[in-house]
Image (cartoon, rainbow over all chains, first blue to last red):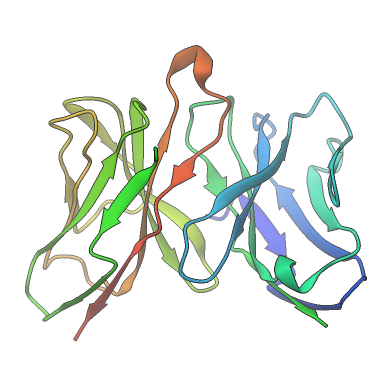
Length: 112
Length: 115
């Protein structure tokens, strides 16, 4: 039972373009939505996170957009760079300190 | 430097053998987790522990066992009962109580291959 559905599975973007990764969740009790970035052979690291009381959060070139009524959230990477090439995971949990449910991941490749 | 250390990084095992993956943290975190990563399936929770001497099954605990005798250590044993053990295993921890921002801190993973 996949509670967080992530798409696309893979994505190729030209350098300078916008990368967009989407996630949809089912459990309306989820109230914490992080994105993790993973480089090959490494563990994931927190990139950016949002709570449902805001519709958007921006940190540098990375923006989370959140649509509570549609139960969807997305990651936008502006001015994508080759160094952004990695696997990105969305996730959700009920509060902090509780089990995170991860999406299946998106492999992003930024072509120079 | 503070962080999570997993060992070994690569491990090969014959069918029918048990193998133990090590996870040590010096972040003074109470909670520790084991995830399994397979291509196209994301991260799936195997076991987690909120405090010493206590742990709970995650979503895919069958064929795995853990112990939490010390705050710093949370080893995972992949037993011969695990039908498809070849995978990338990730250990993580999170800060306790009011210090918890929801962030999981991951190790660099252990890749297990069953021959």
